[in-house]
Image (tube, rainbow, N blue to C red; front, side):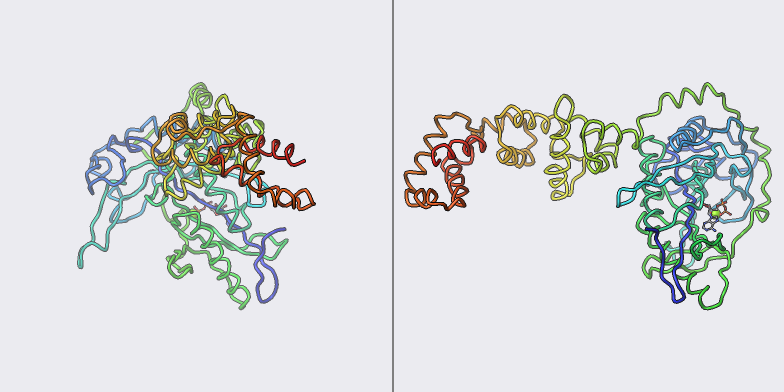
Length: 482
Ligand code: ADP
Ligand code: MG
């Protein structure tokens, strides 16, 4: 069922295309050697190039190019062996050069495609139009002093990848899933850290509405949205606004808008600028960027396994599509799972990681990278289940103890005497004692009150301090009562 919004005059379809700015993960900037670390003292990571000093010349950073190519490959996109840097001219106080170096006419990456998975399990392919490299601008701070504005140039010149999608998304959910997928792919590749709250990724969200079956109508662009949740909210708010405009007989004008998070509405920022306003021209300081196919091939050969491939591999290992999905969302989670599962039953490992382990992380507000239990020890716990030392119930008890101190589960079992009892003699003795002490209930059971069986199991387990092997306890009870 396709997503529509019901207006006063009938249903409307929503059309969405995203321009995502992703900060390249690199030690140095795109055209200078200044550092890029987040949170540094203002203006402590600024070279003469980044500050726009006269006579300074840009020198391209090879690692940033490699990161853009890796990202392009991860987006199943064409890599352009010939690309070029242009100047995009405009004035802004935090743009000391008076222009931004950006790949306008000839981007390094062309058409590609990304597959998204929706909550109902269906998938959809979203087209990538292009990816180009550009410099970030500095940052103006207007709220630090009553009468002054401050400028921090640390971000000036940092490499950004702008990833432009086709207008292929049709619902807030699809837009959110697409942004999350881009983030996931880049985190797997190690080309962008994806930390949206630090500004490493932000999206310009283009939205239009139309009657089902119609061609595209005018779009508006909602600038700088910085979380998956806000992208979804911004799409919905902007679509509803446009529907009201059309339905009241007005016309949607193409413009740039801002999303007001607190009020959940978009506001006009400026009318849309056109490309010619920026007077683009090829940067005379930079020759065209020419890549060798063999270098691109090398980068391709050294790509890590990507989320889609990894998910498919987990399904082939016998995991459910859902488990395969949740275990691959973060690369770190997948690595943890693989260490637990190595040489063991993959399904058992998946059950424990997505079950007890995830629940514990939630409860303790910890993450896989700050894990209270090592993958090695969790794996050893599974071995104790598989070899019959622990029942599922005892294993949970041992796991709780592991959360307190990440000790080897074998040591916890010995120290607390938690080993499961599988000795038939010991179980028979316990069962006989329970039956003897409850002669009245035994008579009732034999007279047909089947439900009492659970009572006998409970009493036997209690007598054995919870350590009886559940299957054997059941078996012995059946035999003695039958
Ligand atoms: P600009 O830089 O002028 O914003 P781009 O071509 O770089 O233009 O980006 C346009 C973005 O708008 C793309 O993500 C594209 O998918 C999206 N888009 C284009 N037409 C529509 C439309 N009618 N409705 C929604 N999104 C659209
Ligand atoms: Mg735009």
